[in-house]
Image 1 (tube, rainbow, N blue to C red):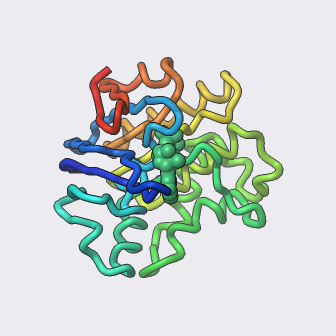
Image 2: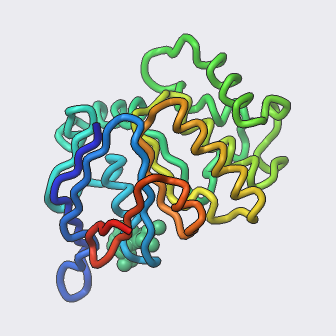
Length: 221
Ligand SMILES: Nc1ncnc2c1ncn2[C@@H]1O[C@H](COP(=O)(O)OP(=O)(O)O)[C@@H](O)[C@H]1O
Ligand SMILES: [Mg+2]
């Protein structure tokens, strides 16, 4: 379960703190999915960074599977993120010098050795339709294919929480639809918690519960 309680975030501005989030509360169980919309600058990426334990809130608490990530030591926090949270960003963020297979495997290279990692990477790349591209470099792939690699990478550790920040934002309509189909299908089969930030009404409508970030708070759409 993911729990956010009264999360706030201020950034330092020239004339005092700039509030970005002003009291976000959420409770999501295994398998649940929500979309979050909102204008540029409304704090969507900031909220994902906090829920994904990349950035601490100014106040309020976040708990994932009963643990407050911000109470962990830095090495334990890195391990927690690696094991429990998958990210897909608007820009695929693949390593250009690594093959498709290597990019997907990267999260399994840290920490204790991960026995089934290679098989899981191959299986995931098969599920995203890229089994014929294991040795390709990112530069040899289309935008939609790169994003599919990023999705496989986000799922390789079988995370509890999958955070997607405008995952189809850079794609043409056809590739965006294909990436969305894949993402939603993989989410359903794995029962991860899915939080999908998007500017697309069409994509948001495919997720059962929709929110909008308005004045630093989540409102149901
Ligand atoms: N590290 C940071 N330092 C200062 N201000 C930031 C930082 N990150 C984001 N902001 C500000 O917080 C606001 C929300 O940003 P962001 O979460 O990226 O919005 P969105 O993803 O909805 O476009 C913006 O005004 C942005 O300038
Ligand atoms: Mg953003």
